[in-house]
Image 1 (spheres, rainbow, N blue to C red):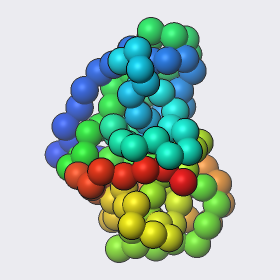
Image 2 (cartoon, helix red, strand yellow; image 1 turned 90 degrees about the vertical axis):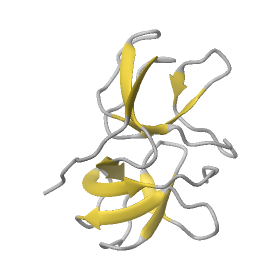
Image 3 (cartoon, rainbow, N blue to C red; image 1 turned 180 degrees about the horizontal axis):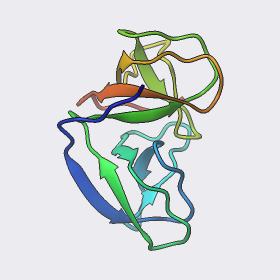
Image 4 (cartoon, rainbow, N blue to C red; image 1 turned 120 degrees about the vertical axis):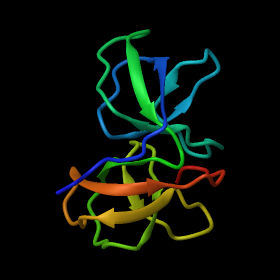
Amino acid sequence: MAHESNMNLYTLPASGALSQYRGVTVDANGRAASPSAGTPVLVGVTQNASTAIDSAVTIALPGSITKLEFAGSTMSVGERFTINTAGRGQASTGAAVAGIILAGSSGTTGRINTVLLSYSLISTT
């Protein structure tokens, strides 16, 4: 079961529809947005879904223990992960690390795990 604790939260307007428990960045207009390939900074993980541009989206910032949706891959507790362009967690294959898995495991796309978000400057893959 996924848990959340010690969260640092911040609310931003959304750039459009965003899913809950996905990684986001900030676009040039100061809105929370889905990451794109090569995006230099992961801001955090959405705590609620947004349905339209400028709707409020609350984000768990680095240092938070939060839930994150994962892409389909085999991962387990203690493994490092990164964020893909859909905002889902996936295995980290290089230096880009968004955090570590604290509880849960991944296997199918859409699985929710508890993670500790890293303070590292990362780029999406």
